[in-house]
Amino acid sequence: MRKHFGKLVVGILALSMTAALLTGCSSKKKDSSKWVIGTNAEFPPFEYISKADGVIDNYAGIDMELIKLIAEDNDKTVTINNMEFDSLIISLNNKQVDACIAGMTVTDERKEEVDFSTPYYVATQVMIVNEGSDIEKATDMKDKTIAVVQGYTGETVVKELGYEYEAFKKGTEAIEELKNKKCDVVVIDSATAAAYLNENKGLAIVEDKDAFSSEEYAIAVKKGDKETLDAINKSIEKFKEDGTIDKLAEKYAEAGSTAE
Ligand code: ARG
Image: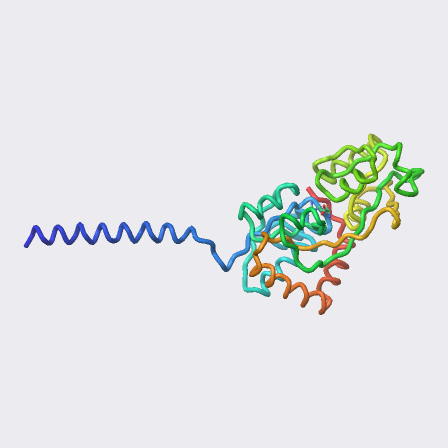
């Protein structure tokens, strides 16, 4: 009797260990109530780090508020994975994140790698110069020292114009370069340029509608992830229609917080 009882105990132990192992595994499974969102929080007014007015942790900006609303609309909670802009598309394909919101322009090249949501914002490239600069249109950059941010559409545009440029890791680095007169012009997205001007004296924005066409920002998901894309699109359409997105853009137009 004693002997059998011992076997039973061993048996139960073995069973519960297996169960523990199984639960251990299943807890690693994706939590469907949570979205991990990739961004590069160096792009005011869309995403930047702010101790004062963080929306998700310390992250603030149009995109951060928007993705929080979209997530809530879909009964999800959001975690931000802040990384280099160039890593965002890779992180989607590695399944490190569920979606990326980063003031990301829809381009044919990127469309080959990810799926884009309905666009939620229209921007254009502009030139930031020091006040008093003689740059009035894009072709005036021909013999000037041009700064762009690596991997941004601004880099593509300058490349297509056939001009030489220096690519910086962050917008703020390019702006410092301009302020120190080490370059003549920074090519970057319009709303971000406006945010930098709010924070820095002595700079001016030069537009050239003929040279720079409009760009649409959209949220990127892994190619074929229809479930996430549909959920996001449904909310974007709702927030476009009811004026939520316009209000967010207005609210942050004045913010001008620096991305650091
Ligand atoms: N709109 C530009 C692009 O798609 C710049 C976006 C930069 N965004 C950022 N979060 N750093 O290339």
